[in-house]
Length: 69
Image (cartoon, rainbow, N blue to C red; front, side, top):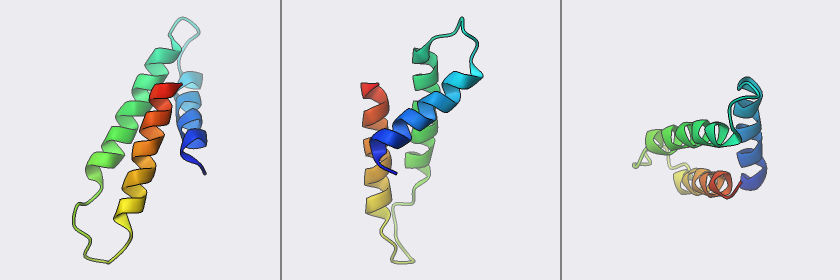
């Protein structure tokens, strides 16, 4: 899934859990918190020789797309 699609999916998931009185900006904030948790939990060392940079880059792009929504 492309970062822009993932960003929209995350915001939509949070938005659907909020009441109509709550705003889309709260859904964006929840999605940003979730993405920040993913980014912060991503290991900085790479003992299994996996491509951590690609996943880190993906989630950073998702974060940028959420902010752009």
